[in-house]
Length: 462
Ligand SMILES: *Cc1c(COP(=O)(O)O)cnc(C)c1O
Image 1 (tube, rainbow, N blue to C red):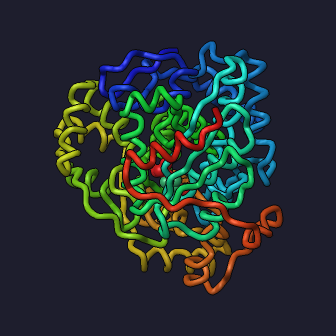
Image 2 (cartoon, rainbow, N blue to C red; image 1 turned 30 degrees about the vertical axis):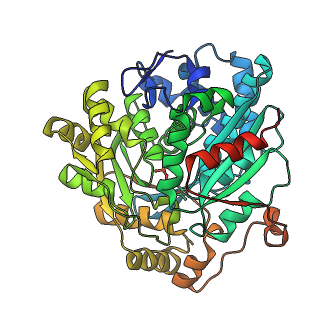
């Protein structure tokens, strides 16, 4: 299995190198050269299997010869062993034909754990085999960073540096990043917003001297290994509701477009997904683009769903690559126009996008109202991100097709917003009850590439 860049210029790579490198050297994102498919019989045979067994069957064709069957199955088992629910991704019914897929039972209480825990296992296996070290640098709007730190803390072959926007993440998110005591963990509070963090990270990847010098590896949502791990729960949830003999739709709280793109991959693999609904908060570049064809950046307005506070949605490039019939030059051209503020998607490409994706936008007030209603009418306490997914699902769903909304974080990760909406303050699960008394360790850093690179070089174990 080979992976190619969305900008058409970087060399094709196998799974292991794709995963270890993150961003392609031409600035593009890696996608599989061809998407493997599963037959209806293959999908039907998943009924009754454990999450781990479904994970193996879904991901195996993408991994090629990077791991043997036995090793790969073992990595999957270890990745999900620390989850606080036996089903890993349990499905609960919200109402008639509307279900909630709870993706928040991992160690940092957000869906990012599904991918990051597996990536941690795969990095460790690949690096211990080669005897090499890597430096992981990540940018986070809150949940990626904590999930990455949790997955990589204490590993010998890895230093992990996480950039988060100073004062723009929740206290639980911050403490999950600043309280681990392992010396290979470095939390960095950047003076800027999430897009600044993401932009400086891209700059580091494009500085090839620095990139090679520190052996830079990326685990942001552009990392193909992460997208792949997220494909699994579309299969496990759809199968439990009757797929492949029934169509299912999904509503996905969206920021960087990684989670919903995993749904698109599931569909291309043969899962009968009807609609994939992109649910955004007031930072709605994706909703505007899918409505009008114009992808034009605006300022980020901080919201009560901070993990979706972005304006440049990195993984959307992968969707554009397919919508433009896999023309890397066309995508590179669009990304150049984006540097100057935005671009217009061609009519042909818009038709392809609209074939797969719908979209909706939810205001702050509607988000709070949805949390309140879900608590009052369904007895379900939602985090603000999940509430956005539920609101869009309720507004747009087809009564004849079951709808699954992805619950992307545990309500206790965003207690202020949840309390404001519902009057209830959700407690942290017991296993992390002491989070607020642990000592914090973090460095405030400027939004400046050279200073950030120096900071990192000075701290990697050599
Ligand atoms: C990361 C995140 C999202 C957005 O997911 P993308 O894959 O970036 O679209 C939504 N909700 C929560 C809680 C998240 O952590």
